[in-house]
Image 1: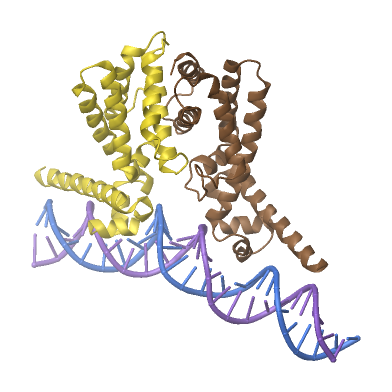
Image 2: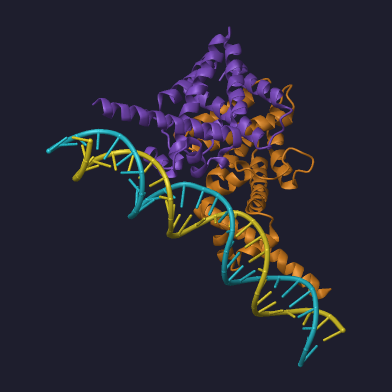
Length: 193
Length: 193
DNA sequence: GCAATACTTCTAGCGGTGCTAGGCTTGGCC
DNA sequence: GGCCAAGCCTAGCACCGCTAGAAGTATTGC
């Protein structure tokens, strides 16, 4: 039993090592640098070992995304709860979200842009995902009017996601970012719903 | 001279053929099916011929994107100008945009999701792109308040882009789409800015 | 009409990708 | 200590984007 459990522990540890290596490689050199050969070299095992832990490369990306979502949920929570008014909380949440996307673009892509096999808007959604979305729901709750907070949260999330991805892709100019964000948030705080 | 010009005509025609084949292949089987080998087979030439027209596969995708933008600009214009009130025009524009993204997902990705080498928010932006964005500007103009219409247009575009991509990626549920769209547009028509 | 030339297109191949079959080594058990 | 099973690695598959150099074709000059 002891040997068995030790092996399981080591396996679990190696799996974390793979995920961490993938994340670091993606964050430092972009996802195009994350090849199975390169990743295998990084963890000092051969390629097939990766496939004894994950069914495919995509599954590794998914695991990285999940970690990222947990990280983001924490940051969103910290930002929102530190604010002293509903309006400040909303602004802090939005800024924290965009800051995360800008600081960790590769991670953000894995979470919200790449095609990934995660149950998002369902009961089986991972807790971290529910937590992150919950922060949005709480932030918009004071401004719901006759709209369901979940719906409003989705709209805000979508708007921020759109801003971030279009800006990163060079589709909208960086310069006007603050002005856009202010105007967007005003649409949420001022409207009666 | 005549022979020269005939050759140029034939070349231009073949270039259009390549772009059309790439678009059709992407729309019917997704971009992952668009390989240079497959594309060459489709146009009944060898691979190197593609590279005598385009510097890379990405350049072909960019050409397809440009065509798509022109298509969308037309559809947006038709939808907006057919409406009889500012609110209806805004709603029609938004619906047309989302409809385009849903009907032609591969094309949409080339235009707004994939990394593409096009000057977007600059003076040198292609006319079709300016036209498409101009439709957004006109649609939000009645609702600007003290925000610049261009800024508001970018926000609306970003919000719709976010909704579309998150929905397509399974990140937000399809069911509540109409409700979300209505609530989003309400934020634009009701707020004072 | 024919040879020389210039241009176009193709064949074949490079170094890379994700993924896997099958041999080999290593470590636990009797 | 010898056997056996589990775990790992080497080597290779079919594919990718892209390109050098051969082969073919059309145009030009005689």
